[in-house]
Length: 231
Image (cartoon, rainbow, N blue to C red; front, top):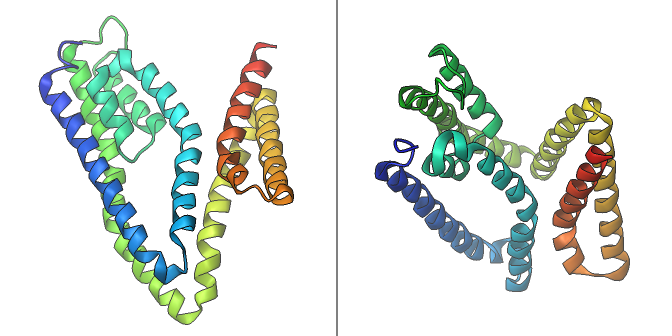
């Protein structure tokens, strides 16, 4: 843990969060500049930002739980670096596990020395770094493709992003269904909650309920999952 909490790693973690803070300011300013072109009022823009902030609470709870689980293995700075960047905690932890195994050790066992930590941390960092490199390389290519498609048929570009998100989250949901009855009950509970809240928001004309629906659905899903697992 003395190696895992050296000041240099703390500086690296701080640098990552400084970049995230600056990026957030840049994106918000860019959204405010682009709003008039999209026929969005300041009120609608603020509602969108607020809805995004509320919707991020649920996923952030999952990140916090993963971070707590990793603290004893990698120390605070490394975990802050991990959760502050694009990537997958499961994928990168698997990379660290395989790296530790090549050293004849496992994460957290009696042979988990400073050398094993260094190798595991490097493997985890490379795994996470490749997400960033892929994003850097693929974003311009995808932007060109979307621009050409919008020139051919603007309607297509309004359908493709929504269809892609729907397909991605549908596949994530489908892969969880056969795992256990707890997974099935959790998915049904959260889906029912989300559907009910959106219906109520429409009937009652309550815009605030739309903003909170996602966070509430995740919270209900967590509660149901806990209760189903303990029964």
